[in-house]
Image (tube, one colour):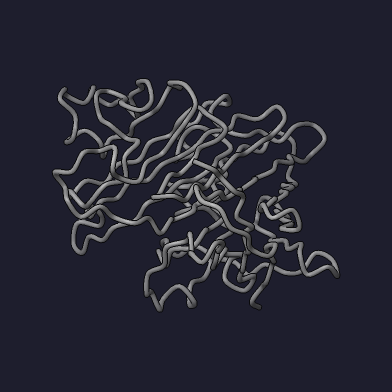
Amino acid sequence: MVSRTVPLAVRVEPALGGRWASLRGGGREWLWHRDEPHRAQVVPGDGFVDAGGLEECVPTVRGRPDHGDAWSRPWTAADDSGLVYAVRCPDFELTRGIDTSSGSVVADYRLVAEPGFRFVWAAHALLDINVNVDINADADTHARLRITGNPTTRLFPEAAQHLDRPWPTAARWIEGAWPTPAGLRMDTLGPDDGSAVGAVINAPSVVVEDGPDRLHLAVTADGQPTSIAVWRNLGGFPAEAPYRSIGVEPMLGRVFDLDDAADEDCAVVPAAGEVRWQLTITAHRLQEGTEPHGSFNHTA
């Protein structure tokens, strides 16, 4: 089948933690949203308020501060272009520029901190994925994640109840090969089954397949560990009022919680005092047609 590139448009909200509020192309919105009025009221140190979109999580995802220190702070323009924004946190400054002129989304990041500063970063993207409502349908008919090869994949303790083996005592994670680490199939994004599992895959890129649409996400960073995190919540979280959310999250680092990280599992600021990396997002559709180039918008 013929594949064509679908130009993407981005809308961000600098006043709300630099949040990506929209990632749109080909008549569809890729980012999932949830009605959560408290998102606009957060202050640094608050627990994470899940309103969807794409949140910038740094210097950790789990742990403290919950989902990091940048999502709960307003970002300010770093130049006159309207494309580059920055946020100052107690231990670092993060700058992000987004360019959509090619039709793809290219986000360039620069983190400045004292040499030796350790951090994890995730583009915490919650995706609006179509659901095959037949839980008994063949898994190949569901939306899925495609990753080249069978990279090492870490599962975390919330996966324990879904495994066919006991969770090792005091283990922070267990490892297996993608797409079925420890026998748990993680590449399908099917209907709700009451599970909620996080994984970190030792790979720099992923393709999300949803019907005829493809979304390719890739992260590059010289000298720093990269990975793809997946949060596959199929109606299993939170326990008191579960809902569905699918997170596909390019990362620097290979753990959710910075406190669990050895140096090889997180980014480390070198002697130069800065780390730079790039996130690229490209969309394709398996049919013919054309569409104007993407665009970038911000909401103050």
